[in-house]
Length: 589
Image 1 (cartoon, rainbow, N blue to C red):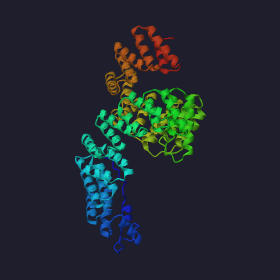
Image 2 (spheres, rainbow, N blue to C red):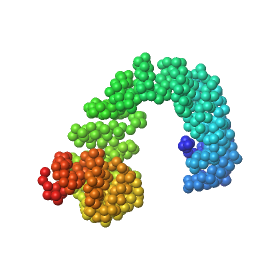
Image 3 (tube, helix red, strand yellow):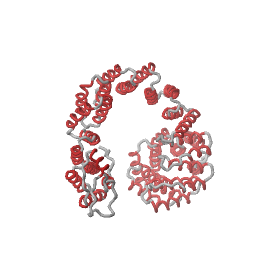
Image 4 (tube, rainbow, N blue to C red):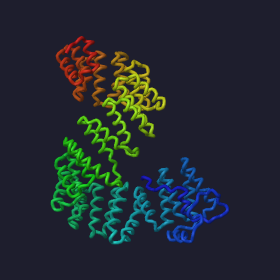
């Protein structure tokens, strides 16, 4: 169970305690609202049913010591202190704090004991009861919850009883013993079969234990009681279990209730899940007719339009989406994804300045996509020929997380490498590894650059360090194995490394390419051809074509080899591997 408690700090705890002023309290003790308690304060405390506790120096010392020990990683001593203090003072807030400590330490039994004490000291506290119920349903003492649920539902005002039923179902849905929870739910709902909420609750409960037929029957009962209820029809669609049946349920309802916004939105999302994109777009457009500023609908239309390869329409909807967000500053949605998509659309039509302008709008470091936007911005600047500006932009990107800082260095080195400054890129990564010696991604890229500069010892040492830090990193095994095979040295070791990589990622075409290449180096031409053909079928990459072509050439299939090399040349006329292979074999295309 997640700790749903808001942690009460010691200062906040003292601020709510009634504390008599005595000469024993240190002069520098934290000020509290009750330190010089007014008659009004005392009356308020009495109204809340809280005890008037004398926070003397002894109690203050115990609580402070407990908080400090808890902060330093201890839980048992602080927990016992809080429980004893709660029992002595009869203050429920101390029992609550004890429960927080036990929950943070993942001590279920102690947490339940503290929550019981909290309820005992604050019997009228709805919050304490809620936490007790939420916790006890996760234990083997779930039966203790039933009378409390029954009393709460019965005591709820008629206009709030439906909410109480839903709350009961939501808490029981988290129970470990689903069958017992459902049987309890059935008993609790028995007196309320005249309420449509009870049938919705029973439908959800039946669904949780796989009783789909009962779930559908209960949802239908609720819908008959309130034929225009969106909640009822959404529940019925959910419990049907069949996408086509759910479609019919929602479509029939919309035919009778065309203004049902929630149902139309759910129907549209269901169609998207079923890859029925044109019908989904029709539903989202209908939704916008009634709610032109529905941000969820605008965003969904943008995504659907992209999937339908309608970039112009997608751009229109994402711009409207952002415009609506701008008019509603209180909306918590992060516009990052829409901005990134608009940037990609601009880039796809060759508008690099426009693509960068959209990325510039991700200007908040609080955005989840801030770093991605900054990295992409630098890449676009470099592509447009402004390498210095791109590197300056990266240097100005402020992030606190070491992993994020490592990502910035990686992109910086990548920009230098792509521009042909391999030695500079190598130096950037070499310096970064002084700061981040155990960053697997930095080590891996550093190894690849080291190989290009013929620094083979550094390359192998770095890749082996990656294997230590990230044993499941198949790329490190593959890179070292391929490097050995390419240099035609230590071939049995190269084969073992590539086999290990292939075990971790059996469908990776580049690892299959490495396997074909090491088999070729070892003279196993049939095995080499088989591996390379499988790799090329998955990904017709020029590098794989070059290798497969050489294997065919050595097998005597000159025409097949030249055909592959021409395909590679058409895709990448400047491919270095192709040029060196043709020169070594003295072949002209």
